[in-house]
Length: 583
Image 1: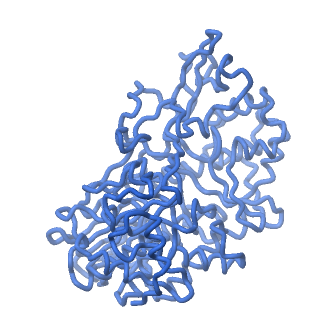
Image 2 (image 1 turned 90 degrees about the vertical axis):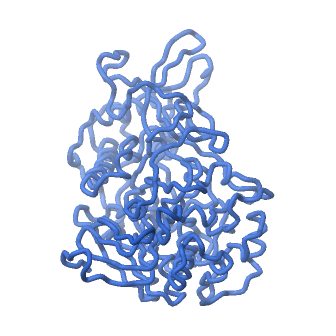
Image 3 (image 1 turned 120 degrees about the vertical axis):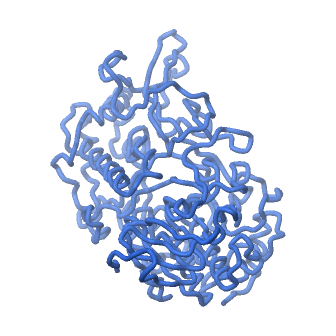
């Protein structure tokens, strides 16, 4: 439903809780608030047309190290998805179409109104409290408490809450923060112009010449390479990890929609020159003799979703990540964001065209034929945004955008703490169970010399890290303080994805299961604050956690019943003894 243009003070719709964003966490927040008897509405983000965010928009291969980390509504959603797919309830990978149907059913089951919008325009505030949100298309929503469930943190920013974009400097609490240069610790060499070869210590690493004319710096750099005075290792910057689309693809001829054999809009083969050079380098060193194995080893990460369908993600030196293309997105206006969104789509369409159809002799025919087996899936994304085409994923994977700045920032040390470490904030509202993980941010030049004295200059992807998190059980806590702003900035808004964490810590927190669990807790906090008109910072934790709704047959929340538990392991042990708690 889209309202006609209205003045900011008229035609308001009033709710106890207003959720901005149709993401998975936005839906669990709304369900929780509704279960507690509060009036709640979801206002769709600037481009959202379907509920579920990444889970219904492409991300079927959910990143989870330990399923024990999740209960309550987050695990309940997974159980319903598995039931819809008619598979055993031990899977965390699914076809996004099943997630979409489950989220649509939840909205109907709990009678939660959803209004599409063209994005957030402005808020009205009285002192530190937001009283209303107006959208670009003139809808106005008044509320007692607001939850920003968007990937971009737009409502948060409009509410006067401090935010940041990029990477903080490296320090003792965040050893992976900042400019990483050519560091190879924490898998900095992963997804890079690097492949092991014999006598590597003598001959040097495999690489790709970065110059338009190989060996000639004066000819300029290949497309996508950033050249500027290199900052010091660990220096903070405004770099944003790469985005892509998580491609739902199949090789099943009965479901496959072939990608076009004509060049996509704006296709320029020079933009893929480093891809062709990389293929040539691999081929010369006999790394792609088995074409199907080479696709999985060097080009595309496959998550098997069942039924012959795959969640295709970035993998290797040149893949679906549009490296360097995300930097301007977080704070761009909606018109500029649309251009960036479509640039990511053009990159991936061009990538597949280059590998499937473009005539370049450096692509071996067996590799081309193997890539031609991949196509889009006809059972997904059949009702696209007006600017999109059918079968293309609904959601750009905005891995990181704005993050809240408050006085209780979650750090890399926090998400890697051992099980006997006292958290800085024991009010756990979500848990995480995945590596600290950042995709590359940019392409730079790497120079060096081998033991024979020969210099080598190559393209290098910068920014990746993949490092463990959690204690022995691979689980860490996410505290209530991470989703609430400083009181003087705002006292009735929470942000559940764009929360307060360093770049390093956010790399582990940003997963959808954690988002859904944070959403449920935020929904409970919002319902309590709406009832008492207390500042969101003052919501009693014990009341929050004992208010968490457990649908019939669902697993109880894994969150502690009280704020005194010293470790995640203790939290889990405590939660498993709890009875179902209904509002």
